Length: 223
Image 1 (tube, rainbow, N blue to C red):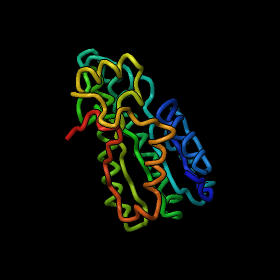
Image 2: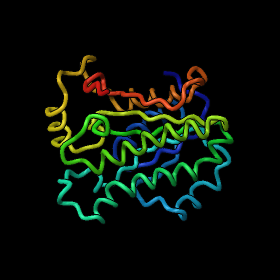
Image 3: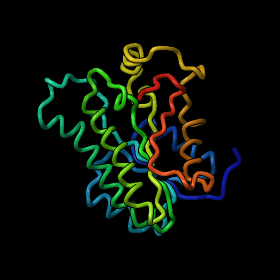
Image 4: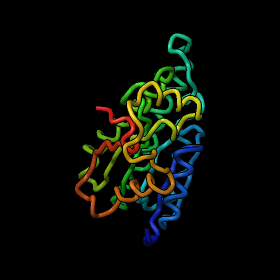
């Protein structure tokens, strides 16, 4: 794919899928800004956004380490549940609030990357599934609320291997998938998933908003 005229994307989250999708966007010609897994609070937003006059794309994939760890629901304290589920969802909301003005100025797009166990279930990952499903629904709500401001919002659902340690992802796939990927592979984050994100910002998809796209090679097919 030929690089485009440079546009500005903010990619939020540490590790994959944020890192690899960011690499793919750079290759496609985007100018990239990054926020990691540090807390997203009013101070963070105040520092990150006032200097941006416009922002063409926000990609959210911020799920801190506790969120990605397998834990039995009955073993979690209220504080651990908050850290693994409530805080990531609240951070996604704060991010959207902070990005609103620069996104509106550019008529930009916000994309939330979420794991498939939010739709299909995943043993030991109830907090992660809860946070991810909340963010997927948030994307739909933003699409309805901000569409008249020219902002589009989507969720892209990825195979758990994009987020979890290999052993955890392999066990989840074995327990839930019914077949090998029909396309023969799980999509590559930097070479393929990033192109889906890029495409969602294009004029060709200008009438699409509030989509929940499953980009997993057909492995799970939830719904």
